Amino acid sequence: SDIILQVENLKKHFVTQKGLFKSKNKSLKAVDGISLTIHRGESFALVGESGCGKSTVGRTILNLLTPTAGKVIFEGQTLYDVENKVKIDKKSVFKLRKDMQLIFQDPFASLDPRMNVGQIVSEGIIKHKIANQKEALELAAKMLKLCGLDSEAMGRYPHEFSGGQRQRIGIARALVLQPKFIVADEPIAALDVSIQAQVLNLMTDLKAQFGLTYLFISHDLEVVRYFCDQVAVMYMGNIVEKASTKALFEESLHPYTKALLSAIPKTHPKMEKQRILLKGEMPSPVNPPSGCKFHNRCLYAKEVCMKEAPLLEEVRQGHFVACHRWQEIGS
Ligand code: SF4
Ligand code: MG
Image 1: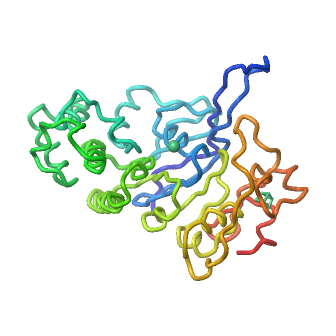
Image 2: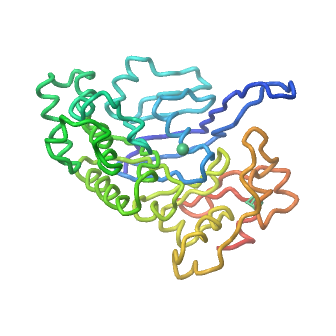
Image 3: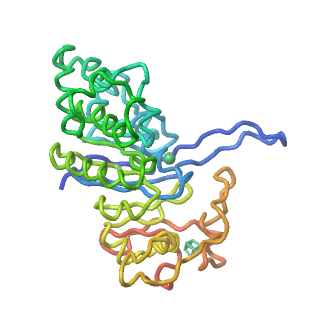
């Protein structure tokens, strides 16, 4: 099927302030060279612990952050090509906003408390001059209805709604512009467990109805399992494994992925193994370990792991892994 988004060797480094020890400014390598291809109609998951750089990837793709290096191509249009000094102009970014939208983790923080729901959801339509005020409100009401809220919600304010309803408002606001591509950054992580499935079901229905493509950012592999077609697992700014959801769950190859999967109870008959407990915590991204950044937590680390960073390689069709020892470790 055809490609909607292509990301090549994307990097986003932040310069941190000088520390107490008068050291030089250091660079925090939030995203350190990731590549991914997303096909139209797919749900593509970016998974990892908090601080691994997954949200930064999403925001860089959406032009909310400027990459340090690499390329982002959306529907054949180059948004960034840092090495060749190509950057999309502001006017085109504005136009692109219609096609690429963000659903936030915390809908409350992203909804203006002084605006009523009708204003919130219709705002984008008016900004983009798609319709006049009256038509915009009609479109907003229609989209809210599709998202499970009746027209009475239009005159009310964000604080009058529950967390799940607020997320429905956030989704309606994103979808009213009829985007093609949605970055959903932990869209259900802040919701009660009882509400999570409802919101995921809504996102699934809307995907089918509008032919959407999702980049679904999550720390939770279990959620991803039922919602996504492809999964990329991130660790400290790099993708360490990438595969179809099925292949990843049946036959994960990277020690980090295996540890994440082992934390899910009864993932798969083959996976009814002991929980793999990782040593220690994720190191500071300002001072990443040498070689394989996972080596200080990996049960399989050897000399080579401390010296050489493993490359992400396609070891089976469509299944990529970055580990020197994946073959010896087995699945
Ligand atoms: Fe572990 Fe070495 Fe593989 Fe890194 S490269 S995941 S340290 S075995
Ligand atoms: Mg995040």
